[in-house]
Image 1 (cartoon, rainbow, N blue to C red):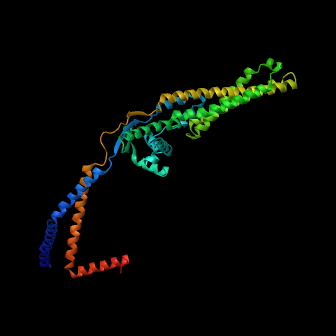
Image 2 (image 1 turned 45 degrees about the vertical axis):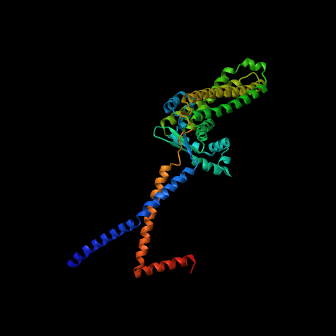
Image 3 (image 1 turned 180 degrees about the vertical axis):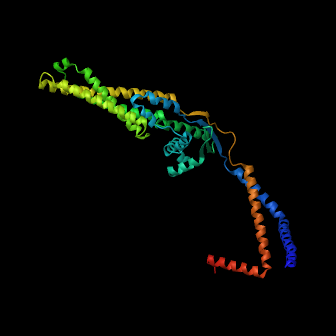
Length: 401
C-alpha cells in the first residue's frame, strides 16, 4: 500500500504539472487573440466615449438650521403657567436626515419640475417619471461635520448649477410653511391659541354691548371683583392647558406633574370661593329686578374680562416664541454656491477604456479555455458521449427535436 502511494504521488504531481503546462500552452497559442482582442475593445470603447454627450456635475454645500436646545430648555421656567408647552415640543435628534428627506419630498420635487419644466426637458409623460429622473440626477448627502452636500448632473453646466441652487431655494420656501424647530412649534401653537382667544374676545365684547349699561350697574362698579374672577379663570385655563401638555412627556407620578396638579386644585378652590362671594353680594341687592339685570351684566362682563386676560396671556407667550424663533436662526446658510463646472464629470474616457479592456480580456481568456476543453473532449469517447447528450437535451428543451 505504501508503494502504491509512493508511486501515485509523483504521478499525481506530474499530472498537475502537465495540466498547468497545458493551460499555459493554451494561453501561449492564443496570445495574439488575448492581447489584440482586449486592446481592440478598449480602443473601440474609448472611441465610443468621445461620441457620448458629456455630463457636468455642479455642487453646493450648505449648513441646515441648527437648534439651540439650551435656549429652549431655559424658556421652560420663563413661560409662566404655560411653561410645560416648551418641554412638550421636542427637538430634532438628527436635523441633517430631516432636511435630506425634505429635499426628496414630492412637494419640493414638483416645485423644481414646474420651475424648470423638467417634464419637457426629460421627455417624461408623467410627473412620477420626471421625479425619478430628477432623483437620479440630484444627489444629497450629509457628513459628520453637519454639512449637507448636493450634487446636480446635467449636460448643460449652467443648468446643473441652477438646478443645485434651486433645491436650496425651494427648501427655504418649504421650511417657511413648516414648524421644524422647537421654537417654531411653540410659535405655531401659541398662534393658534391667540387666534382662538381673539375670536372669543370679540364674541364676549359683542355680548357685553348687547346687555346695555344701567345706572344701578354703574353704581355697583363690579369691575374690581369681576377682574379678579376673570384673572383666576384665565390662570385655571392656562394651568389646564399646561397639564394637558405635560401628559405627553411626563408620567402622572412625576413630581413636576403632581406639583402642577396641586396648583390647579388651589386655583380652582380660589375661583370657587370668589364666585360664591360674588353670588352672595349679588343676592343682597336692592331688588329682584335690579339684581337680575345686574347679574346678567356682571356675568357678561366677567366673561369679557376672562377672554381679555386670556388674550393678553397668549399674546405675551406668542411674542416670546417669535423672539426665540428669530434668535434660533432657522435659516439655511450656504457655504458654497453652485457654479457652472469647468470639467465634465462623465464619461471618464480613460476609466471606460481600462474597464472595457479588462472585461474583454477576461471574457476572451474564458473563451479560449472553454474552446480548448471542448476540443480535448472530442478525443475522449466518454466525454464526447456526455457532450452529445447535453446537446440533445438542450435541443429538446428548445423544442428543436
